[in-house]
Length: 139
Image (cartoon, rainbow, N blue to C red):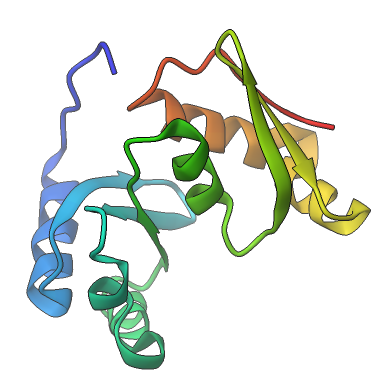
């Protein structure tokens, strides 16, 4: 949250296309090598995804990349829960900037962490853009 977010021309094009297709208010766009993550304003997730996910499919076809849409929340715990969706977590606790996620089962735990903790670090980086997150842990 301390640094200013700067977008390159590609991200600007993706954001423009997203808003044109979905008509949803966009908060942020994060471009990764294998996917594009769009973060929408609170209450805009239904409009962004569209009926039966039609908007997401249109975007994936147009951008030729995997697309994930996440609803922003001013509460860090709710935002992290939205970020890891569709994976289910029993609870998320916070202690001095360290957020601990408790998954429902071992399969979910593995998918949350990812190979070499790649998924967990990606979630951490995204959460750090908005909140003072020191670390995300999975127990």
